[in-house]
Image (cartoon, rainbow, N blue to C red):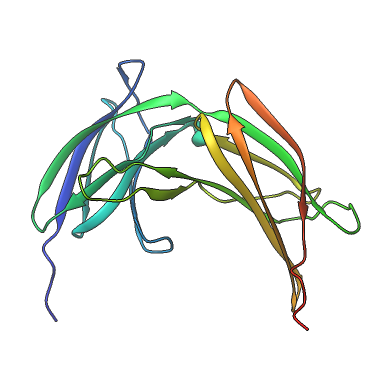
Amino acid sequence: LVAVPKSFLKGQVLRDGQPVENAKVICRSRFYGEKEYRTNTNANGEFEIAFHPGKWFVYALAENGRWQSEPKFIAVVPEQTLSMTLDLQRAVEVKGVVKDAETKNPVPFAEVYADRQIQVGIEGEPPEWWRSREVKADEHGNFTLFLLPGKWNVSAWASYSPGHFADTSREIEVKGESVDLSDLFLQSPKKLT
């Protein structure tokens, strides 16, 4: 068993040039589903995270996602220490209701997320897909996401029972104070004959 030397990320989270206390700083692997490293900022908005080498997205959230930084992409080698500043901006509230396309009834507890392509800013690296935090619709199918301005694909899915799966996706432009998607209709996949 060989221990891989850790790498370190230090920095500060700011909003309008001022330090943000208790913001969440997250290092997420470029591969969805892998371990995330998290920490909170101190009273001066400062943070430090130890994590293993690799390629990571780093971003910050405050006030349950109402304030967010753009994700930054970093490539880290063993025992490297990087420094960065993460600037928060107000996220746009995106609301909607997940419904079944056939019955038009709300779908409780459906999973909803959004993704978009971002440039990673490292020469030779292709654009990456960035996925927002996933939220669960309430018992009436209502959901709220907080997204930074720009084009996003909003997706929802649910498994009603074993063998019954439905999903949907819609491209939207996120801007202004809030976006009301109205209804997201889940479509059952076509059966193969």
